[in-house]
Image (tube, rainbow, N blue to C red; front, side, top):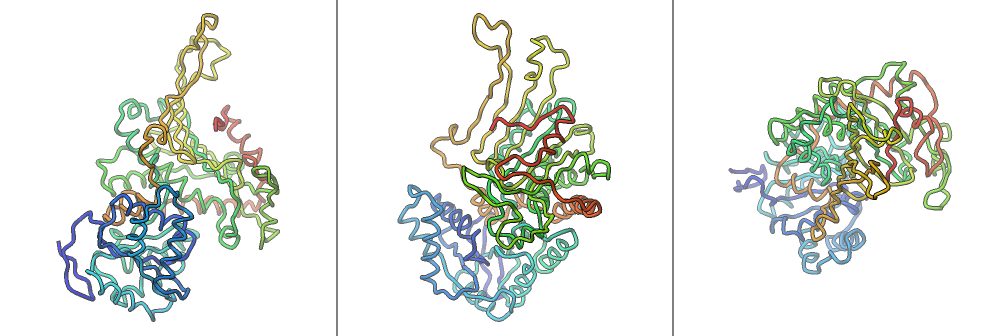
Length: 503
């Protein structure tokens, strides 16, 4: 296969190769320092970066190459475990780095990117946009106009893509005017987690679960994504977005899709994403009467985290004290199809929770005929616990007889547990960004979100936001360090259920 760069000669490339030029816009930002450089270093450490792969950092600040390399080295020493820092690998990785000062919104200066590429072997370029989505279009247009791209160039974009369906479509149109959909990689880092990958294997490789994964055997599904932190200085962004747009529209709905989708024909990217889109189309909309009963919005007040007093949302630096933006959302929804008819999906996400926690609980139905002690009937259902963070793992809660001569046929509940750290003690669990970056380099899209997924998720969320606006009710208050408003407990209790609390 031949690749031809507009600025130079053709060069043969191999499908699945990690030999690329990576142009990182926002190279001095928080995401780059906390996640991207450590992930790229780990790939290099594992021997997964081609020897010729290079990285060009782009930012507004004036730096020379050596100063940029020093910044990256400091980031790695801060965010990579000391025992994983290898001097030889670090030296090799830093030697890959170049830097260019650039005003992203102006076309002047983009020619230097083309010139940088010409210094190398004209390998495929991956453009990583670790910047605000409002300037995605400007960057893509200027790259194309400067001749810095070729027919194999790819672009990676971070969420959130837009504020609603209209703004999302505008941003995606701007990207799509330069990059075809087959070369656009929309990141949701949850999709790179080891446990999320295991969810696909668990469902579709094991008849034990494959035959039980429907409304005949599952009573309800529960997803919690709890954040211990507050808004961390992001007031300007977060107050415009809120928890629904920031977390539900992407992370939680992606998890719903992976739980609820039908088996794909194969593991090709579009086969998987076709099934996810079907789920998004089937999500139950909220009617006005359901809105008051099945959705709870919250906003944290002052409280305590780890024994330390923390301010309320309206007391954060730069706060609008009249803001009605939600920092917590809990809801009961469903998927309107044959597989999931009548199965409620309870979703919960918020800031200033007691724990940093992301988990999925699959609650299986009880046996139709119960023969054990009546006072233990509440135990008599299996649960599949899928933990995404802080420690990834999967546990199946099963019932066995309690041991002892005096116990009779008393039941006890215990897990059949797969903790990845314990099960693979000699294997480091890779960070989600390591997997995602590797798949981008190889040109594989199955872990990334397609445009129609984004738009169907926005349609569903936009209808909920419009309904909230019509009601014009303030969010319910909850103290920082708690599990949210009391109303979120009442919402699930009205169905005779409770949130899973075995943390």
